[in-house]
Amino acid sequence: MGSCQSSNNCSEINSRSKSGRLVGRELSAFERLSWKATPYVTIAHWFQVAGPATPEELAEALWETHTHFAALQAIIKDKRLFLRPDLMPEIEFDLDTDVSPHGLALLGAEAASMGIGATWQACEGKLLWRAKIFREGWLLLTFHHAIIDEKSISMLMKELISILSGRERSSPKPSLEPKLTQLLDQPSGKFTRLMEQRKGGRLPGKAVGRLADLVPLGARSNVQAREGKEWPKPDGLAPWQERKTKALVTSLPIGEKLRRVCRERGLTVNTALLASLALALRKQMSRSGKIGMRPILATDARSHIPDGQELFGSYSLGARFRSGWGTLDVEENTDFWQLAACAKKAVEDAGKKMEIHNIAWYMRFLTAAMGKKDVAWLQGALDLDGPDQGRTNAILLSNAGIVSGLESGAFKVTQSYFASHQAAWGPFVWLNVMTIAENMFMTLNYVDPLLAHEKAKTLLAEVESYLLKACDCFDRLPGFLPVLRSETSEKKETQSEACEVVTL
Image (spheres, one colour):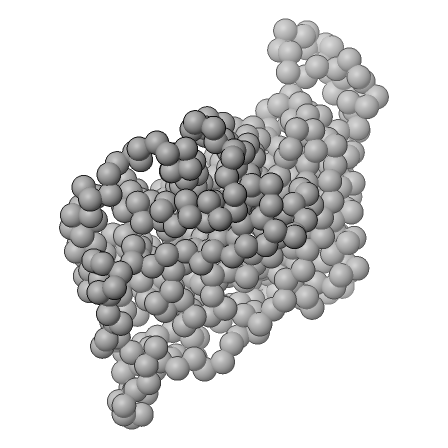
């Protein structure tokens, strides 16, 4: 970062609007996305590598993985943004940390909530992923969502264990460099079109510059500091950028029960979790005679996965502070399973009608749960530059399982999880969920003081209560196997009556 030579010219050319936008100059794709999204679009991914490798050898393999992985991603996934092949990951060692499921869940939640940089200015000239190495082969990697997704993580892990085992990598690095250079020379028109899809008009500037000018390639020793791209001085942090995130962890031995009851009803575990979150949040936030904060159900269509158990997936549940055209209520006596069914329907509908590579613009109201027939756009809540900036809140739920088939020589990835904090509009509370066999580990992350500690404990207890009630019929009917479709309809009706309805 540099300082402007002329204060008058600087204020005219690089001024900031009241909503925080940069105006008066063209921004590259790197600049536009980094100041818009950081640090609120982050994936924290932790996995365990089994094999004869010391922490130092794991760190060395990560260093070797990075350059090749960046080039491979650029070619296969067409991800030009944030690629810095000349910079290596920040790697730290922490061999005394608790690596139990509870401990790792807390570490992942903390890493995701921290983001990559405290502000968008902090990302200038820095690599947008970092790594921590723990004992027993555990690694925690934190990425910006713009450069990696769940499929990319699998590619990275395969590359890592391939290097550890000494096998030849999937493609030699020299053959990738010319293709990467050619790719980075292309204008980022696709990114511009993506950003302009947002309701409320296009963003300032035009991302048509050559990324090769922004990201010089070549030997690391020859890389020079970027010139002529002065950054305006930050005018202080907004309140939602100064927040402190805390976490609560609990576990329930209901993994298989919840899967079975959801399969019987044609639902997914994620939709059941959404319903429990909606009801618990409504009970916490509703106050008779006052408008207050009311829950808005929303979903990320990109992540609808049947059964939602062994694959990556995430859902969101949001609430807004103000009343108006977009605020909706979950009715006081809303049925748990009707709400879960509505969540599934809206997710499927969103997946059919919207492109699957976008993130924030996937968010839609699940108005069907509130007696509506259509699914409306979530407009004002996603307007990062409008009057609602920083006031819209969301719960984010991530569900990850063990990735199979990641084995090379004497090395194998035995466990893999992630916590995704991709709510760029400033969440105040969100829930990360991971399953290990029968156990479901839930980490409730909340922003203090927007949600007090005691209220957070009560909210998590309510979520547990709804999930336990949903599985209660299996405790009373141990022989009930809902996955068997050969049962008679009369028997199904009898068993269905035995399951109590979960309501407020």
